[in-house]
Image (cartoon, rainbow, N blue to C red):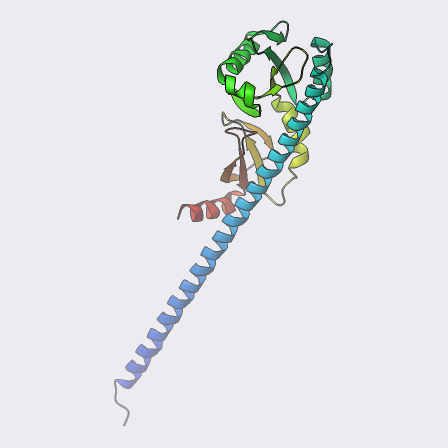
Length: 243
């Protein structure tokens, strides 16, 4: 004989099973969402890292070519302002050149502006006597501008300290435009300088929001590349990144 409580018991079992299935479904969906968020974060970081590496390599290559060229020019006994001007025409990535002898005398430019004076003072202050002996390259941040410093050896007048100030507009035109491709969909890559100013973007940002930023290497001190995504996707990725 079926008791009066049996239907209630069956209903309770079915209801409990439905709750368990709903809970399992929610947990499965949540795990899927978390996995998707992790994948988005990893893809975004990989994209930004690859962009930073490509730009760094392009800048270093341009710097090496520029240094090699001026090193050859400095070996000529007639090396002087005219040779430096000719070098500048071949390397538009740099908008100013500073040459100093080991005794501190400024050989180029012959006349300089207050801004040039700050750069020359920074070179003299930051470059130690050991640097003259060891050589190498250094990147200095002078009033928000990057100055590459190195020592030219073998010149008839002795070792020369050279400072090459980078032109940010030429950097965008000659390096960033070639090294960074236009991103797909609504994503955008933005290069930000040391002051936080956007100097290059792969596309108009419109409603896009920043997802993450990655620093460049030594050649672009304190500069960063930021990845922007459409607002909805950016919020999901950003919220996932904060967990």
